[in-house]
Image (cartoon, protein in one colour):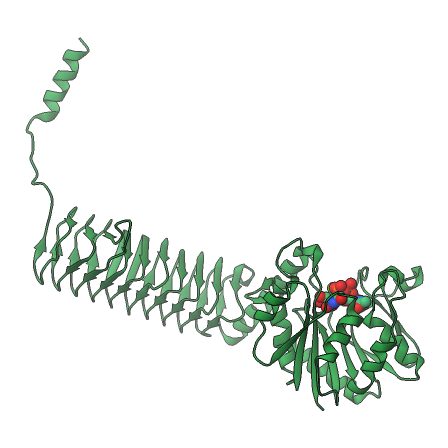
Amino acid sequence: MSVEVIVLAAGKGTRMRSDTAKVLHEAAGRTLLDWVLDASRSLDPLESTVVIGHQAETVAATLPDGVTSVIQDPQHGTGHAAQVGLGNLTNHTGTIVVIPGDMPLITGQALLEFVAHHNETRAVATVMTVVLDDPSGYGRIVRGTTGVERIVEERDATPDHKTITEVNTSVYVFDAALLGDALESITPDNSQGEYYLTDVVAYFVDGGHRVSAFSVPAEMGIGVNTHGQLAEVASILRTRINADLLDSGVWMLDPSRVYIDADVVVDPTARIFPEVHLTGATIVGPGAVIGPNVQADTTKIGQDAVVKQAVMLEAIVGREALVGPFAYLRPGAVLERGAKVGTYVEIKGSTVGAGSKVPHLSYVGDATIGERTNIGAGTITVNYDGYKKYRTTIGDRVRIGSDTMLVAPVSIGDDAVTGAGSVITQNVPEGALGVSRDPQRNVDGYAEKRRKRAEKESG
Ligand code: UD1
Ligand code: CA
């Protein structure tokens, strides 16, 4: 049976109090609309269209290939939105699934079961429902003897209706051939003066057709209208992501304090401590140990790497590398196998070769460091003269003395050494010592002389 999907996403989302269109708010690394479209993909739809209106251009720009959009302007309600969406679809032979763009907890599995249920019954429409302890604000499902009789919106509900706890999720499946006429027939005859999609139910029933309901767990029905609800759905999405990872074999000390976005890949043998935030296209390799307190965005963490108390943005941490505690890897930082970046170290646009170490208090920017080299504490690559950035090249088995300033562009040959406290402005050849500092001078008996002078002065 062929399926076409209409996603309703034209509304303003006033209660978010935000300039961003409601459906573009993110939860666990994807927009609300992406979550809905992702779930709808399980239906393998012939066509998908998104009804947009508020910030139409921005929303349209985020749509994946194969999903079209249509503008609803002005927005005369959900029934009008469905009509605009239907007009943008060409097929209309099987069933039409309508989903609101603000329901990110709906799963592909639930949608599949929902459509299967619809196809098994002789109903012309099926409404996805949830039962809520507090149904206020939602459309109530009024059931008759053979199925759903109608849906009553909160604003139009009688006290009797208000006691009904089964509510409309706004996810529907319709027989495509009948939906157009139904949408033509509804009127804005209600307290809001809008065309309600919910009114097609009574239209079908009055025409002698059957409408059925399909109930799903309450969690799936949570729509995002406020930041409170956004935080709630984000928390549920994270719980689902972590549950899948735990099932796969990942160890987490406390999953409630681990924040992993939808597109992150974590190997089942990884171990994760609390307060870890993994976002973007981050990949965690086998046996890697992450946290506590790590933020990694679009960073690749290699096999058996250990990362503690670190911020890593678009970085690559090689196999068996050690990062932290208190390290900052900025875009283009590449740590090769077994490299170490330690405490209070910042690395940007630089490669730290295999087995090389930058253990303490350093800034390494725009540099290439070879293998088995040690960068002494307090070393800085002076890469910026206020106008341009320059590169520093350091060879294999080099020993950069503590507190060396490497004024780029500069190059240090293999096996070379720099004296502690040097300001290196010229290349150091292979195997050489580069040192630049004043020779030391000792003043004998200085402390004694200083004390006598002070005594004389104070009388
Ligand atoms: C709607 C249902 C209600 C249901 C609830 C579930 C109606 C009349 N009511 O109410 O029964 O319990 O959802 O969350 O349908 N939209 C448009 N164009 C419009 C109006 C809305 O595209 O002109 C879109 C919105 O962007 C949103 C969706 O339709 O994604 C639902 O609209 P919303 O205003 O949130 O409806 P509710 O009042 O929540
Ligand atoms: Ca809503």
